[in-house]
Length: 210
Length: 64
Image (cartoon, rainbow over the protein chains, first blue to last red):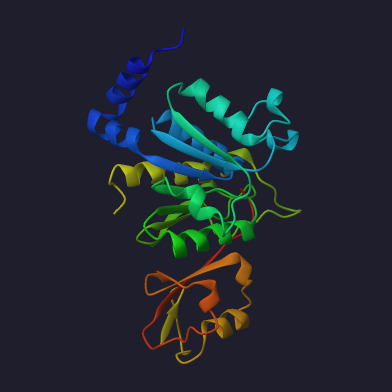
């Protein structure tokens, strides 16, 4: 039996406090890239009762994604936006989720992201990461941006960190561990980095980021 | 002196683009912040370092 909207709201208020939960429920957050980082970020934010999530990705779930991304074997072949939306609705049935199934570019980023307050950069490719970060910082300086760089390999979990670069720009990861033939991605270290990003989102909404 | 990623360098008067090239950065994988503001990619070549500038070059590596 799925709890009703009021029951879900009340449970979150008991955990987070009414005032903070009100802030969470009014927040609008974009997750750009729904791989190991983005799918984990979205799950954490949905659980926390974030009011509106915008999911952005142009890719489909592949069998090689299942080792670190929040999809199920039965979802292989689905668009990640559709699959994740479905999974988030199972976790948090009353969350408002919007999706953009397509590629974000310098040209369309402002249109896609105009309705959100906080943007999580969760792409895989370094060039895509740099493109989104530069575009947001140049064209949407009023928004908070939380990017990620460096989480491959089985290095220590403790080197994943959050660093404040400017007033509204944070960078998570160890900043050096790149994916390569010798160093692949593992669910745990990617999840740590995603947790840093999702945590920063909650801190910003809660006013705990200074 | 110009402070780049925490290191003091004697490069006032040189351009950001020259520095990035010399230091071996791939300009497609970075974002540059100078004195708290983003430097647009189109401005790398005309951005001349002044004494006291504080610069952060953020590098992105693949994985996510």
